[in-house]
Amino acid sequence: MDAVRVSKEQMEKCVARFKGLAGSDLAFLDQRMPGYQRELINILGMNVTENVADPRLAPKIGNAHGFSVAMARADPGNGAGLHWHETEEFFMPLTGRWSIYWLDGDVEREVILEPFDSVNVPTRIYRGFRNVGDTPGTLFAVVGGPDPGKPHWHPSVIEAARATGLSVDDNGNLVVER
Image (cartoon, rainbow, N blue to C red):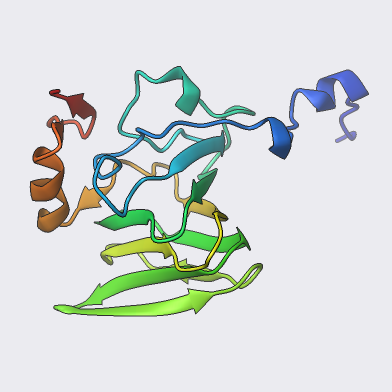
């Protein structure tokens, strides 16, 4: 089999320039709650989001086979609520200090990551993340598997989100009630 030839113009369609990336502040159920405000930028893959109607959440480069790549940008004290996926989830801070936390039974545990440290969270473990630094930060994330599906939220997150007017339907898609 011969190697494929790709022109510079064709390769530019596979590039996402960081300084030009913008995402959405309403991709998931928890994002209206204090401590969970963040911007989600889907870069490549299967478009992991509950807000499927928001065009800002379309992957910037396009589809990939078997994984999704995204970034979360958050101010200090903000991140994502407890959730789990059917797939693994890999995190690496690009800027800032980040807590990757999870439930071990009823006990919350955490690891603190500095830029370019990384962790791979196994499947079906309630996990979340938050910027624990003093400045806005960017967290790189990869969700693996052939179908990342929707997040499975901890009951406490679902209950708190309903108070903000957000819920999800039976398919895991975001419902904005007010």
